[in-house]
Each structure stands twice: as C-alpha cells, then as structure tokens.
Length: 129
Image (cartoon, rainbow, N blue to C red):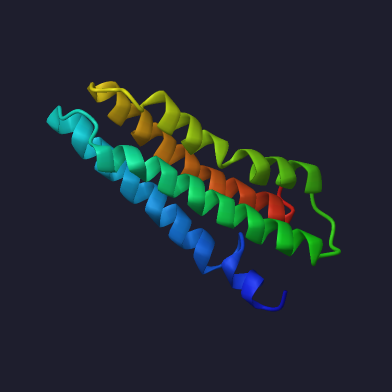
C-alpha cells in the first residue's frame, strides 16, 4: 500500500484520467445529440466503462483512507465512493433500450456529473467539506 495509491487513488493521475474519460464521453454524447443521431451501442457501453473506472477509483480511495490517520469527512467520502459507480450503472440501465436522442442527453449529463463528482471526492479527501 505504498506510494502507488497516492497517484492511483483519488488524488493522482488515475483521478485525472477518470475526469478526462468522463468529459470525452460527455462530448461524444453531445455530438450524438446535436447531430440528431440516436445513441449508439458504443456510447451506451461507455456507461459500463464509467462504472468500472469508478469501481477502481473507489478501491483506491478506500485504500488511501485506510492508510491515512488524518481528519476528514470519512463518512461522506465513503458515501461518494460507494454510490458513485451506481450513477453510470443507472444511466446504462435507463438507456438500454433507448432509440431516441434522450439517451444521448442522459449520457451527456452523466458524463458531466461524474467529472464533477471526482472533483468533489478530491475536495472531501483534502478536507474541504
């Protein structure tokens, strides 16, 4: 549990990459929405990619939290880590049979919300409640 989790958890390159992937998915959904195309299978599957990214982020966050003895809002931090993968999973479930532009709009919103959620998780970790 050495220095890798300092960069692979909620504060390092992995969190930054997760934000970037969320924003790329949101942009991809925006293109679908603006061009009037229904949601593609690949865009739909991107929600499962977000689920996996947030599961790994949660594992890294828990490892960081267990290795730390500093004071911060641990309950709030735990809540964010546990429930964050459920948002893109819910989006995937909601849009699984969607053949309209509404599915793309949902994916767009989820991509933006999840990027912001990573920043919020980092704020809680830093003690900025």
